[in-house]
Length: 461
Ligand code: OOG
Ligand code: NI
Image (tube, rainbow, N blue to C red; front, side, top):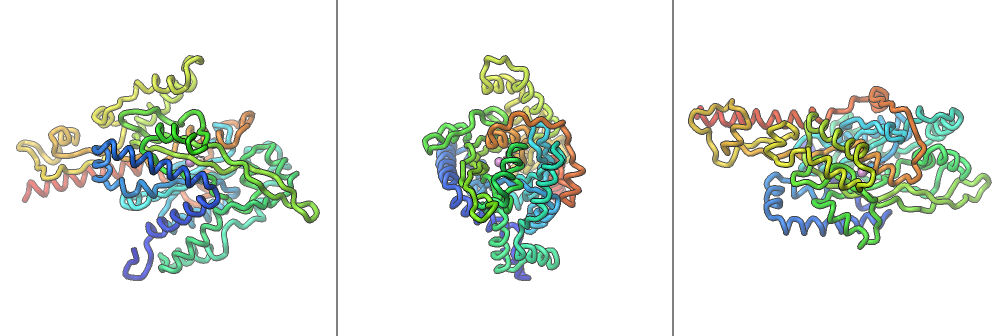
């Protein structure tokens, strides 16, 4: 954890931060604590009932990360906030991966996910934060837009302490043990909930009427963490148990249906809490109000899909949403549409719909007559190589829109011209976002190259 120069590694800082964030959110939103208990219980039961799954997760080192695995979400107001957030997450080994345009779904933000990228880092702690930037350019009311810009320009969401530590990390390439702890404490302040709004009730109302999301981003001191999501091994069971814990889950689980070979990501949430806030008084005393922003969510992760698999997923999801008979419930339409998505690992691999990691089978050697350069599928079929599906580490824009919508209530009406602006997002970020498919493909290619090298070495020996 501490290297020979006394520096703490990024993975360790991220793990400390994720733990501190979880602790803070548990204090702020007790239902989150209940949700993590529910998920821990469901996961323990799944592992007990399915020893093969347990062995497989253990073998690929995926069991250790499960208990600590969380993703969170924040919404930022300005380009400068996003650029500094990128530098803050870099200290924890988290890079921006993917571009998500939510304007198509009537939500005036675009987003990326900050997350660790390499396999070892993901294995240690895959903490990720879905980070959205408000798009004031989509607000038609010019005066309101100017007012929001003015309010946002005046706030400082980072403490002087964290800015100094980020600068130190950039200059020296690391932080010592005590500095890492200080960094975690100072960074956490940015994500804390503040019940004092920075605006009057009248201003809040105006922004809220333009779009609830605008009020949530503009009227507070900082980008409060709005949910923290544990990962479950059986989202249907967890969803069914949510009412027992006093939570009302959203009606449909976002993403693909339940399958023998889980793909991508399935998510569900419980509605945002109504929380008391205090508006800035026009005179002295502030006026009481309430705000809904923070909620709970659970996720189940499946295989990462190739662009070909993803295209099929997107097409079938559209079929289920748009073309299904009206009188058939959405869940049944989804099942029907996805009957056309292959559901065995052999098919998914053979048709190059999902990414796999290839490893030499224990003690295996090359059968006579076969070269180390033989098609990887042949090596798998002959038992020389074992293929393990890669976990999807990212998000889904249609699902994210569903999660946003279920927590902003009354979103209807917002109708923006679809206008992805990746270039604008990257300019604000001060960097390009990484392409998630390129990351999975590189990992897959590297595992194939490693397998072939080992086979060649063994044949030469
Ligand atoms: C983010 C909603 C998206 C997910 O898991 O897809 C999300 C937000 O509400 O800020 O968290
Ligand atoms: Ni989420």
